[in-house]
Length: 100
Image (cartoon, rainbow, N blue to C red; front, side, top):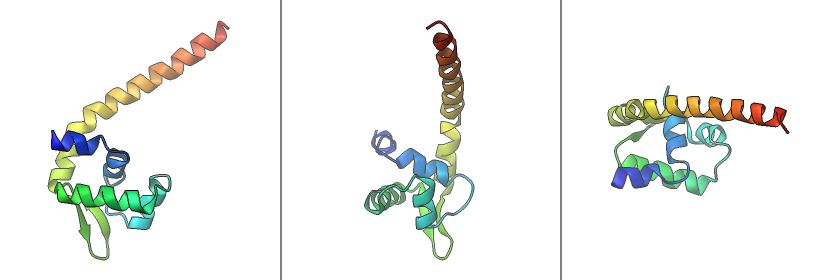
């Protein structure tokens, strides 16, 4: 349950998503996350590091650990579902707007 609580915190999933491909510096990560406040980003990174899913590599920035990569792999089906849902929602809005 502790991991679910962490993942439910604002910006936690976004941080993990932005680290999916390579290491990212704090400033770049902040920009990729829509300029989340530095204090919130710092808190999330600290929590994710404590959970063992993110690490800080000197000179390279933040990156996923092996456990972090495994976690994203587990979350991949959720991402696919969300994409299908968003597509249905978008087409539903288009259909409903044509009848108004």
